[in-house]
Image (cartoon, rainbow, N blue to C red; front, side, top):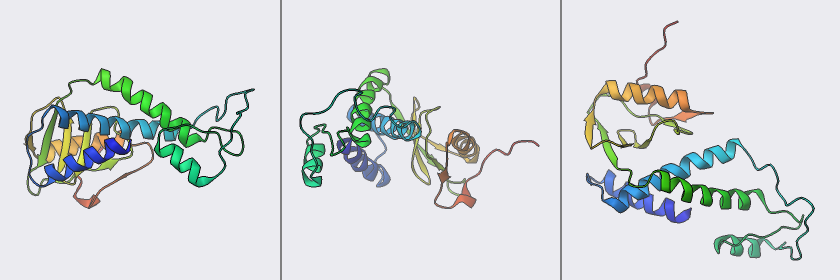
Length: 187
């Protein structure tokens, strides 16, 4: 997961510096980060049901924090002093498997770079955005799957922000919330 985050961060910095075309590897990096973001939120909303294997006791228990961290870094699961697989270890393993499966589903996805025209608003950032494939990068730049690059006006920003609010589970945020137009519902 650290590799996914680092690869995406490097790409994000290049796009923020003005890169406006994405190759196959860069599209895959955006897809991976999009999947990681949404799958982490889903895991946070649905914690593990069984932190251990019922009826099974491990032969080796790793109780030293340094050894636990070394094993985590190496991608090795371990059982703690309570004889349980720690939640973050089981969730991490589960996320990795889900990302592999979802990569297949989203294989070949192309992402467009949407840039907000001057004085046309800013993008909100929700805690999850799984019902449509968009990934905000900055207040004025958003990756959107299945489209080519484009400059967008307040109408698109309003539509995106309304979907972001509707899809947010617990929160959303922005650089300047007052600059984030939305569609208001009729009362």
